[in-house]
Length: 138
Image 1 (cartoon, one colour):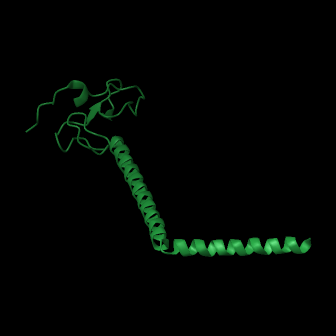
Image 2: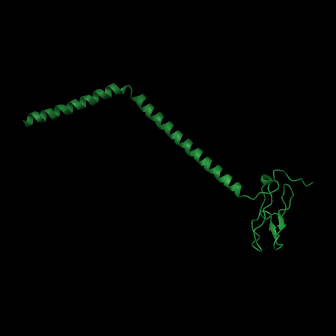
Image 3: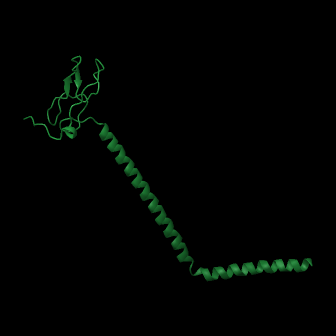
């Protein structure tokens, strides 16, 4: 009985080996195409991943630039970028300093509160709220 079972096991192993060899013989001629398809898919996937990463980095950089531009002070009269310590806009020559209506201290027109008395200041009407451009100074 053990001989029959042992012989059957050997027969199964031989049949499996023959099946694998026949399979490789049949697939052998297609192997370069299969490997080429795998390589092409891998390269395409990596290319798509690199492109997506590049787009995401570019989008993040643009968002950072936009946030930085929004944080930069702008002249309320012409909209150009100005340094916070300037007294006159270098583009439209409007005064960027005024006196606090409460205590008389010199305050930047972009300030929300007077640094001397701490009271809330009235904002200067900007181009967006006034709808018209101020006269140019010559």
